[in-house]
Amino acid sequence: MKAALITGFRTMEFIEFPEPTATPGKAVVRIDSCGICGTDLHGFLSKDPYNPAICGHEFSGTVSAVASDVRNVREGDRVVCGVSAACGRCPDCIAGRTNYCSYAFLNALGRDPLAPPHGAFAPAIAVDSLRLIRTQASLSTDQASIVEPATVAYHAVMRTLPMPGDVVVVQGCGPIGLLTIQVVRAAGAGRVVAVEPNELRRAKAIAVGADDAITPDEARERFGAKGADLVFECAGVAPTIQSAVEFVRRGGRVNLVGLASGAATISPQSWLIKEVTFIASLAYNHHDFVETMNLMADGRIKVEPLHDKTVGLSQLPETIAELADNPSSAIKVLVDPAL
Ligand SMILES: [Zn+2]
Ligand SMILES: [Zn+2]
Image (cartoon, rainbow, N blue to C red; front, side, top):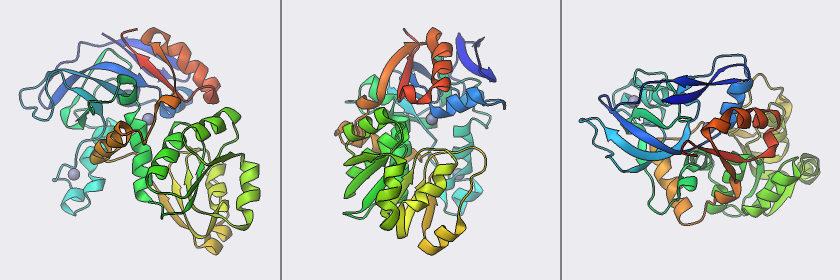
């Protein structure tokens, strides 16, 4: 079996692996489809090695085999993949901080003995069965493959729930921003304003339910005098960390969702004068998946407007190079290994 891996700067190769088998604790998942994530694009453009276990981590599939000790899923189950539930045994779990279980964290990062040697840009993968969550029956395969990024947005909004009537800014309208707009709306925000330089993405923001979609310059004008109550930073580039604080009111809240690499320059004076509450949000916990799928099943999160196209595995190297050169050209491209 061949899996596509990022093996160097702008290099993706098909590497031969043995057919995955269900060794103790594991289930084999036949991949139905796998989304290309911004993290994969960062990995493709980085000169540092890219962790093979996360090269293709937004997948849905069907369980084709389980080890005899696996109880939570069985053959034929449609599943999505996230992080394990808290282990109950690591120092963080014992201290009562189960949301920060180090076992669940390392195993999702692919840095534990159960980590697969490749990701889901492959026909099949064997993973720790505890990471698998049964897909809501009413979700299509395409929807199921976008559950993982939707869960990132869900987790972020749960960290800074809006008050009813809050003016909420979502900065950056890539997949995570477009999903955050929908979750924050479902959570009871008043007015949701998307801030995004790209015109096509602004149109998508309106299509998924933002009240307004404006450019960063327009946002500076609109929120300069009276800031928003809550700002979600979903652009993931260094300069937008400071602009998120510029768009919030005094006493408001900023949630850092997008991952910017490298250092960012901030103006500490504006943070202090605004007495801003700054909260970061990383990925998700196991239970977030079930809640997110419920919101998708009842139509409060729509992922269809995010899905640009589906390509076969053989087209992945050229597709990833195109997206890396022009990341705004698509929101979410899925890879179907059966094509
Ligand atoms: Zn991702
Ligand atoms: Zn733990």
